[in-house]
Image (cartoon, rainbow, N blue to C red):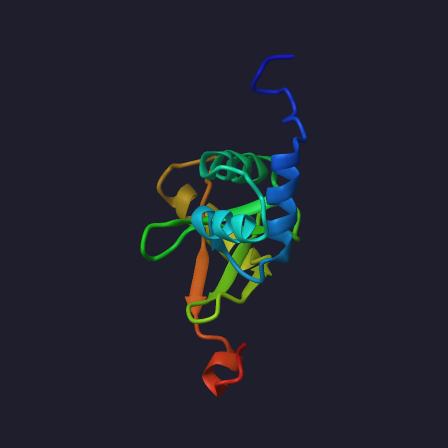
Length: 137
């Protein structure tokens, strides 16, 4: 087995990050997750949180996206396979979406321009109903 295909070891740090991420309602930055772990008494370092989050995203256990501000954000992944997100800009509530229309459109546009093996990232940002009504936590 090469180092690339070798599964990541489950260390206490990775498990702590996985558990903390599962408790988060929406997407969170590595710094925010690190802060919550530290407040809970963990001695885990920020660099370790970054590595664990990257590993979880790589394995499909976490979703990652870049916020409109350019920050990398992470969330525990509930849906397997390729999917998209609908994210509230105010409270961070996130819905995972299977969007076949996006898949069809991206393949068609790629083919129209002579491209194959199309990959894409589509994340939709808006304001959820609870935030519109002022009832979000």
